[in-house]
Length: 484
Image (cartoon, rainbow, N blue to C red; front, side, top):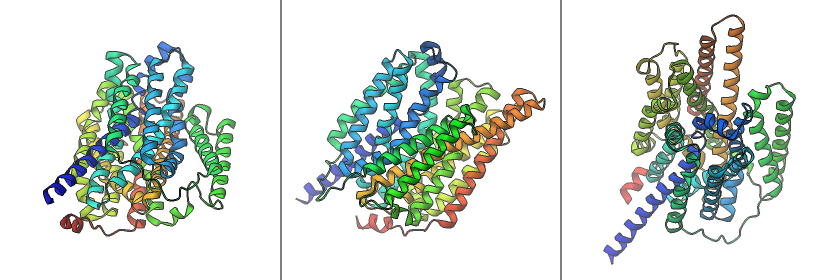
């Protein structure tokens, strides 16, 4: 009887880890699709006839719905079943990928990309809460979150490599169609491995007014940010959209303070670790998005790398993050808690950005790119897991989807806003130097360096806030692991 019980326990444990890998595979598809398209944009523009300004909507349509629906997606999972909504989001994303790959017109592609973003938001928000509920023991949870963190942190740069290979060998359609077998396989195996949603004794009601105002406010804010550089930051469009977004979000907060069952209970932000971790997420995402995008531009436009070589240049950072996700991050959290690895990792990442801020015109990979990549991989590997744990550990399982949506929204909005603002500073600096007679390429590099420096400052500020304000929690994993 005892052997049978042990066998069943081992099988259940194996199923949980297989479920984690499936969830991470689904999330990896979503993360890849934020960057895999960038390499294919010139081909898309030529074959579908996009103009120089309209081509950006292949990216923006995805970001718009993805950023707008993260909060609502997480709450839908809490109320109506996380397994069910993960599968709904996965099916929507996979079906939209087929539509993207078959698109023969600009309108069809942009609309399908928007549906992809919607499905991706639901998958991302619900997957994190599913992982938190699958792994309750602190040591296992830290390990699981480390693997999830690697997928989120390294997936973007992997997308650059994959996008280059697929576009060169099979055409732009392949960057979308490759999602079909992956999505179908993940869906099928999740039906078998994910535990069936428990029916609550009393199901809450969806806060419709909060959902409408919050989602529309986030979408308008994302739109104002992602189109800000093109339209101008002081243009009527940007100011109007920004003002409307602020008004809707203010109305959303007013509703949430008064409705009986709010979409986002404001009491969550009275929990210090949740509030601090979300502020840190915004600051760090601003610096990390700038690193990823602007360092790729530096390597392409200043060092003359082709897209494939740019993607390969990120592999050292990816390898270091993978090493941490394989267990180092979990061990650090169990030994030192959440706060220490968070602030130290962010400080190391800030130093990596500071190294990029001195990037020379005639830089070499070994001397001028690799050191910053190593530090950013090291810092990201150390900090990502603690930031997510700090945002999720203080909430009940019934609100884990909401907490997931909030922290993912913080990362998304911080990244989009930070990248747009830093790119705007870089453009303004470059334009000023060109008007003063500086060589165009040298002025462009100086603008990149300015953006890296600001990104380093924002990341360092995140390290200071996390180090000073995060409340350390006692970790019981050591005792728990001995008990088991």
